Image 1 (tube, rainbow, N blue to C red):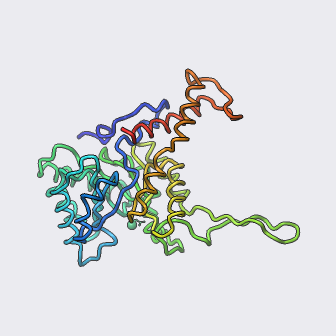
Image 2 (cartoon, rainbow, N blue to C red):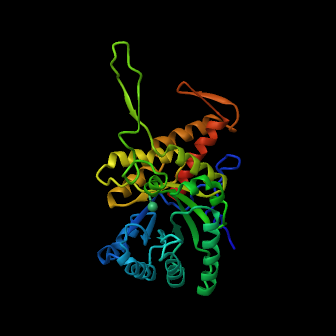
Image 3 (cartoon, protein in one colour):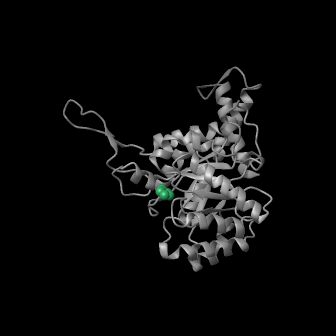
Length: 336
Ligand code: GLV
Ligand code: MG
């Protein structure tokens, strides 16, 4: 079987392993739509032209009574899919739910030619990926597909986080991982009731000054540890890390902050749950013209890439050149 590496054109990033690849196939926003909703399905051709990835969601958010309608809606979308520049993904129900097996069978047998990636929720360990991998192999053979359907796992259980490296390495079909902050919060027994983002109670205060007053309070990032761990596991295995959902649709500022933190830590994209989040992800996960210009300036000043130079009072050396190549190759891949 061919590996995801055959589908993601490796680009030289001027850095030694483990940064083997960057996403040559853009996936800055994985835009969710509910295929059980005929009104939304009618908007798919238009929506598909505005996003990098369109994902038909069969899992949480779809009422139990609409699971079959959602599956049928996704099949309709896959049969009429006509947007080659955009990837079509499917989030199936978990493999221990009553629907997961039928979801996978229907998606691959009916529209496997159109679906690039299946997103598997609530993954607990590599055995879940092995199970899906074998099932996909059988279904692909039955459907006579000529390219493999890839796997994207959602990191949303404490067991999954504790075995994240094994999950990433579990199959050559692994395309990437998304943080699922809502289920992860519940599974870890965190005391939040939100879908991603921060919490005003999770903060650090500056020590009181001599008169007893305090000047500053800083809200902290609830997801820093998990995102950083996920990024390391993904990069070490040549697959792609993503931030997941940001549920407060009205708070576009906090959404952009959450996406940017993930981008800076190494994520290549995030989920968009509403059209308002599409341009946010597009902006955040594309290097800005200023960043690209600065990267070019450093690379030019560094000549053969070794040694050190002073630019605007800052020391740049071989390692900063490698970071600048990451910015440039990301920009090139997105422009391609
Ligand atoms: C996503 O599925 C989440 O649980 O956050
Ligand atoms: Mg979830």
